[in-house]
Length: 127
Length: 117
Image (tube, rainbow over all chains, first blue to last red; front, side, top):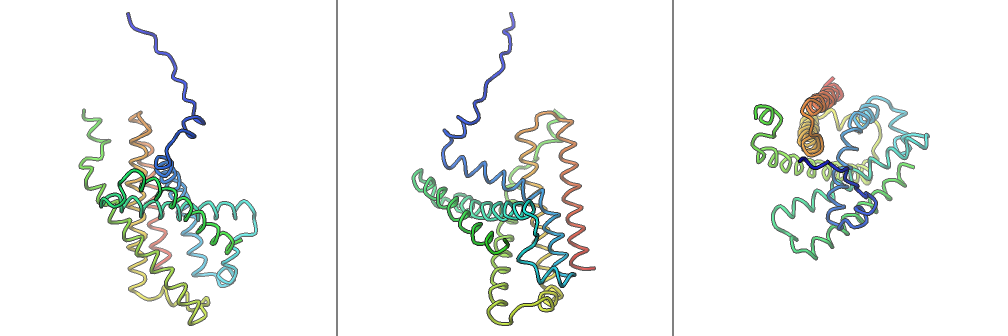
């Protein structure tokens, strides 16, 4: 007799808190990648405006007065910074630098901190 | 079987290598860009004209275009990995693959217009 398929309960908040720091880095790498994939045309449009519109260029540091847009840009800045820092870490892991467990955990923590610091600096600049 | 072949990455090592090579290109580009911005700020007091002139140089245009091409290839490999990992339904995956390609090609064409028009 075929056993009845029971639904599997995934306790996502619990899974997230139990995730190791290296797993968190990995999933954040994916999330930030998707954000940039979606934001690509927007960033290209900004680049286009900066090259064709002088007043836009002059006000480049305050790209938008709209709070939502500011948060979108800060989100994208975080995505770039996190993706870049985590990406450098993954490239180093590929060539077997820092693959020991404790070093990998330490570098994962450093990636999160450095990308947040860079986001804060650039975020203040565009606010 | 056939279905799997159509939707698989084929030789994964190629995609893996493309991902790394394009990543290094983007790293070089982002560092060159920040170096330019810092130098421009410190020395020539950058303005709209110098920004335009900078992107008027052919080798800068080519370098920027290669970087954007690297972004598109990198994004394609990454997004395809994502669909392959999370979307099990073949029809939906074909649709998402197609939309991803359209989104990226449109971005690439837009970048060509920005740089060379």
